[in-house]
Image (cartoon, rainbow, N blue to C red; front, top):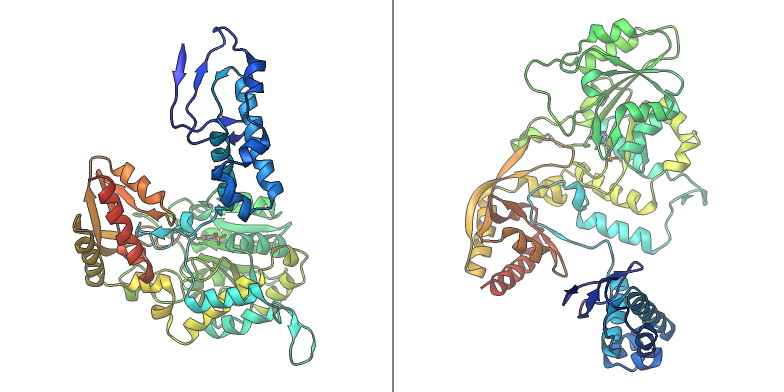
Length: 492
Ligand SMILES: *Cc1c(COP(=O)(O)O)cnc(C)c1O
């Protein structure tokens, strides 16, 4: 029996031998091939290096890298022959494989993609794209020196914590603020730094998994705090908290149900009610009221026809001691976790050893600072990309989808919904218009769009390919049109 596999990729010892090799595999019951003859027939390294396919590589790469790549392909071929493959490896084939392997190393693994899914905060696609000003600030911070930990007035060592604090104070009314790597880190930090060895009260409906295995009960346990579940999954009252409070209760933790909704017969106490419960502890260390609001929505989401998404400033006003939120969800900035609230609590965190472990890097500080300034100037709806996308009116989107449609001369425009996504406003959508293509193989079409130099991520629904202009950035329309023209040309 032999197996013909033209135009395939062969994985040997973890390497791709070639995208172009045509070979025949024989199984072990066949007569063993004359192995030593076959091995002798493999070309030499120099013979492969002389192939025209490798001349560009020899100009671009250090010669030693090209030699290593050729050797690796020859090793793979040798291993294949040793395993009984009845294949002939021409120098050109080995050269082509080596070229392929070298090019693969120059293709960055993390690449820009065009998000045509309509999901605004798409966690798999990197959550929030930052504003132009934020991107520029991040690039400048990365490419040069900065006063990251230098006090320019005094000419001496300063603190990296200072860069964001006054912006966050102005925007939220909080006394103090500190920034860490992400909101998961913020929660872990607050638990480990302020609640370890003591009890933390969490409503049963909030002892949840936030995503990617980030589970509230596990985080608390790992941080050394003792979780005390309060009430029931759907209904928890202030009196349930009061019943289990004692002088040594470290905190009442409220966790926003970012990625799910419990609907129907439900009840959770307000922040003001929880404040009263926390204040009953007048004898021990104060019981902190901690609010993990998740998405960091500084604007009023109702203004955009969406459900109310808790705002950090409302939680501060409502009496929370500490409020936690992400930088890259509805704040629309780089990845970060922000902790705002009482000076004393923030000071304890700043002097905790974990501060150094979890601290934010300079590029994120620069991007976040530029992002927060957009809110301060009242221009966030126009400058922060996720808000511009959320605010886009269906008519504008119909027009863009219409332009795609007439440019490619195919497809249809249909009303649909864009999701906000990304662990914020789970059930919330905004009306949109999408470009759709009815094709016999929609997944193939979606794959062709994904395989482009700049991949385009589309939706496949009801046997159709769907592209939503809402999440396609303003400068990307021409790329989308070119891709659709090519797609239709390929499949004509
Ligand atoms: C998203 C989210 C987190 C985790 O935030 P990251 O920035 O992804 O680490 C924590 N808590 C809530 C309520 C969230 O919505």
